[in-house]
Image (cartoon, rainbow, N blue to C red; front, side):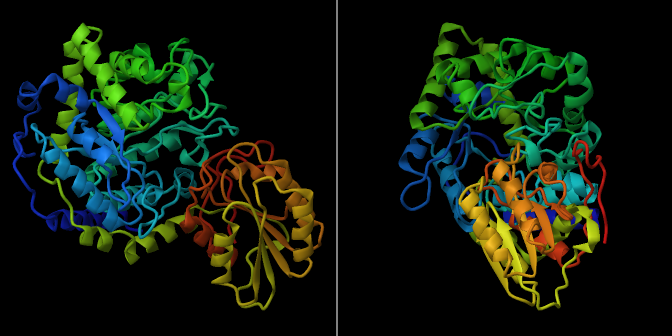
Length: 578
């Protein structure tokens, strides 16, 4: 792949989408991007407008799939400065959705545009499920070991997202996944080594900036060595400061050097820096470590404040004020409208009574306004739904994604030449497993000449009765693919399933669709592929990786090398070829 030429063409497509945007309506008091002066805008703002700029609210959908009346009230009454959308189904709907939000913002006294954000870690498919381009997860790009593919993935994501009206992406993930049992980062990380992670983080930050999209390396100062999901509890890490400096901070240093304009915090207690508070609420971490020690002067945005790590321990009001006092600039409010109102009210009250210094608030507002100026949000408030539909998921993007997926797929073991399967054979194939096995089987069936049947367990931990049924079906097949999935420790039922299918005597190849460590639980399997395609939240399934894995099963050359160590079995960098 020619990374430079690809990115140039993608940026041109994104520019076309912006050029086709409908004209802005109404008149704003704030100036457009050219000559945009954050200080002049700040001088005209009321206190209510200032604190609103510090809150990012998740949108709520109405019956028509467009933003609801309560979302309008958040924009116009609470005066919020940015939004993270719910999940609009298609690119055209996403563009119309963003346009409505911007029109509401234009009709406020300040007329300030919104920053519209989304989680697009493996492309816009992460949030806009239909008609977009699913790309490999970060660990897949780490396995591919190709900076040009990482650049192209960022550029494809930016082209689609900007065409839909998004300005801000919560990627790339800068966490170094040193803990195989990490329940929430896993395949969202590029790998276990800071050099690999930092290099690809820096590459993507530069690519996003070039394509006109705000990149947000996360989760500072690192979420890669945790064993608790911060959605469900408060993680803490006990490694020393030397380990923090050597392993977890280098990717963030690379991101800052590459020009990152925003960084997201981690709801993690890093005891070597602050033994009492999670990074999101810690002045020692945000102001001391990130601002002073690492020299970052961009926007600090919190992770979602309704996650149990924060909400269950401090609550919305207290945590919102604590985060801004600690150094955060934008509070991600992902609860309901009442939570948004509480966040705004808490900041307004703290500003009135002096709990928050006016200088502290003004500094954050200035950074947010500077981001809106730098990314020309004043100039490009609206987008064309037709252009969004045309650009997103176009054939060239899909071809690039599949090529990257094959380059990411890692052949870890292949004894007795179980793989590749002969696509010209009339052999009967059983595809068995857990989590979206049907989708994987569809991709296999599209390539196989002989019949393909499917069996899927009801949960990620198959019962003995389910395993017996899978074995019965395997006896009627000539060859077996078994898809396993883990987001931490592999459930015992999946390991029993693989061993039982092996015992039938049929050729069996296992495909790890999530973390690549699954083979440690069934090390005798003769053939094993890792695809890194499914995140810890099992609904986040990357169909490109299913398609790529099927291609590799039937003879496409696998390109991946392990970006992590499978302890006691396979080293970092291991990967076979046909």
